[in-house]
Length: 175
Image 1 (cartoon, one colour):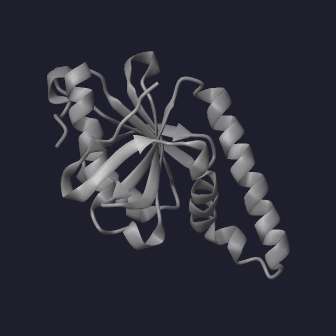
Image 2: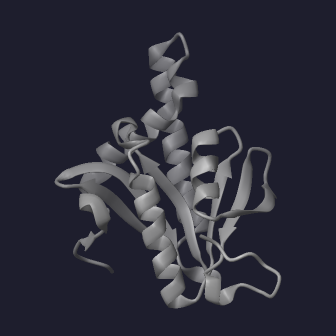
């Protein structure tokens, strides 16, 4: 089990998630579900968000049992979460979520660049999936050199970033 805090550029930190972070994680998830929060019945919306959060948590636990769960901090404030899975010879970004106030500030890019540096050290690609309806995230990933690996279900696209040392002849090196 990992302990301690990892420092990233720009005052960002990663630390292992704790059970005391559950309320923050539930609120973070709710902030990403604008679609459900727009329902006219606030009680129904809150119930659906809670059900979806629990379903996502169970799904991640089942699909990525060895994943590491981190809280992203900025100075002393919690601003997001990162779930990483290093199985199958890759650095798989299972989930990267930031609170609304932290989006568009370069924090997600800083975290992803740190994952790219980690991938270079362990000689593995960085894999992730992006919601096709999230142009901001898609643009960020493209700027960081991620390339499409095709559809992943009905709503997501699988993306990969290859460290330059692992690029096959004819494959473009990533930024």
